[in-house]
Length: 274
Image (cartoon, rainbow, N blue to C red):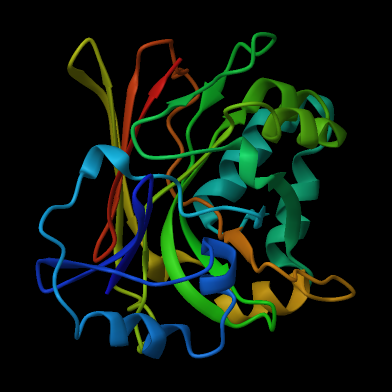
C-alpha cells in the first residue's frame, strides 16, 4: 500500500484505487500502533472518486529528517576523492569500516521539499550534486514503519574543503526532498530493490545511474539502533540511508535541472533545481 499526504487529506492507494484514511493528523497517523492494519482497514470502504496528483505533499509533518553517510562503497570513494586535498580522505575510509556509522541531522519538516517542488544549490557552492537515497520512516519505538524516496542535496566542494563543514554542505533551505508516498509493507524491502536517478538539462539527459539496495553496507536495523541511542523522536523520524550513486567529479548541478529518482515498488520523486 502507498500512503499519500495531500492538500485534500490523507489517502492510501491499493490495487489502483485510492481511499481516504481517517486521522486527526499525519503525525497522529504515522505514529500510531498498528499503522499497517489501520491503513489497510481504510481500503475496505468506498474508493475516492478522484485523486489529484498535483496535490501531493512531502510525507513529512513534524518528523525530523536524519541521514547516514558512507554506507555504500561508491559514496566512500567519492568522499575520499573530494576531501583528499584537505587531508580528510582517511576519515571516510575509517567510517566505512567502523562499527559506528556516520549519522547527521538533515532537515526539519518545514524544510523538506515535496514532489514537483524546487530543490536548491547553495549560492556559495561550486560543486553540487543530488544523492538518491532509500529513506525509511521510523516510529517512536525505532521500528521501520514505511519506506520512501529521498534526495540528499549536497555541496561537495564545501564538504571536501573540511569535514567539519558537513552541516553547511548538507543543511540549508531546499536541500532535502522526500516523496512521493510512504510505502507500507509487511515484508522487509528486498535487497534486489533497484534505485535509479536521471538528471535532465534542457530536456536532455546529462547523468544517469543505478544501484540496488544490496549494495548498502549496513543493515537498516543497525542504523536505526544507533540513531535512537540516547535520542528520542516522539513524532517518528525519517532516516536517509546513504547513496550508492554519485556523479563524476566533472559534474555539478545547474539551475533548471530536472532530477528524477526512482525506487522499485515506491515510485518516482521528481524535482527541479531552483
